[in-house]
Length: 124
Length: 229
Image (cartoon, rainbow over all chains, first blue to last red; front, side, top):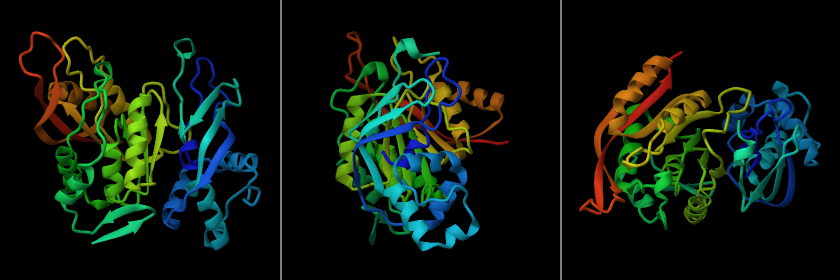
């Protein structure tokens, strides 16, 4: 699971409707798999995302080099593009957990696949 | 002519239905298909035909460089076809651990790093609060083809979820028996609904003791659906 997928996931436990996105990430095992950099795709992707949420996630994962707010100039910066590409598209979380900041429900990541399946008692 | 694009293969501009089919052919199928989840193996030739058709009619940009979702990915056939046609990212969703393991193997062996797997119940999953994440959605949702299984309109719910999360087109392969109900549903919701191919023969195993044949062909329809608003 890359951060590319992480931004699609929120906590859907019954009653958990605030502060349930983005999920906190606990990384136990990760690896880098190289992928070709596509600046247009990256830009399109990021404009659709909540950058503030992503930025918070990046800080929590110890990626401190990213600005709190994006500016037009950032997209012309090669270093920025490469770093962003690395964290969004190349970093694969193989084992870990996604944790809801609101209800603390843990979702396991096993073999790179996040498991979001809820128990019957957790469903609305 | 093939060009390696981040571990995957990208086909030349002259997309060939046969090359797409031969790419999908060796993928691992379901090992022990679960009837209650309606896990029917999509034949590679049908998948190739449909994806090729979309490419030809709507353009390669339906997949090339796009962010695609596969709702109910099974063993990953639709996801891998999307990746083969140049999708930059494919999010493959399914509820079943076993078929996701097979999909993971297929992704690994075909080298299509664009494909990511997510285990979730699509009836529970909700798209994130910001803009619609996907450019294109492809799906082959549960058919409602076994007589003792009630479909409960899962196909319509998958379609609604897809349109909610997709800024472009949603491509769905459905049981032909659902045609009228789905078209009515689209009209009610204000969706654009285009029946691209009718009466595709899809092999489905029959589970009842009194049925003579082991498999039957279900006539299926292939739709393009989008939010007209």
